[in-house]
Image (cartoon, rainbow, N blue to C red):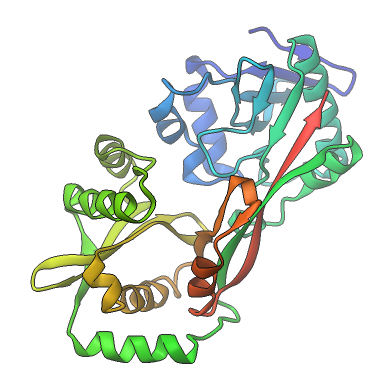
Length: 321
């Protein structure tokens, strides 16, 4: 779809497969990008979402990307298949005034193409290599309204919290059982553990099928890693880690009934927190919400907090055009 050069000097155009290499090269170098924004990750579920990612140029130079999809109601979502998104920005020389003008240009592009609103999920600040919240100022200036807020639980390695008394007790008892803790390459076994846990506890299936998790792990072996705690040769607890430049994030957490009874997640998380303390700034346990933040799973939040984590907000905004 043809771009439009606006009064701010921006040319906004829709992403097409011909742009794949250019997109990935920019995403790799950006100051607020993660591996989930590369096309090899985003496109794995292209059959479920109508991609309408945007690319923004000035004088022919690519300066910003927006992972996005379009729904039949005329809403542009930053991207429905991702937990967070927002404009991906270059390493330097693009300030808040530039990003404000980018938002104006993108809004004009959307109106010209029949898009009625933008559902915008900014990147949580812990995932950026450098401060990159210019988009929040632009959203305020354009009158966007908050439409969601989820509470994630994060350990800052520069000033980490500690396990509370109960978790220290669980750790001692679980360690005495001698669980074997480490990384696993057995994706089917891990997915089976995850599938059974989610079905038993929540009557849902994993977001990623076995084929999808295998595909993504094969494409991003340094970013997606699986860990288990086993007893008697059988995995009783498991965590799928998503590793970005700054954050070690627990994407999936699963236990068997025996694993829960013996509190085997505690030594597994103790192992993982220690493992990534030398390579990452933050350890993020993920959110404890449903329905965009309206429902808080207080028990799950309390468990994550007991490991020494405190709150990071995953926010969401609606910009009506």
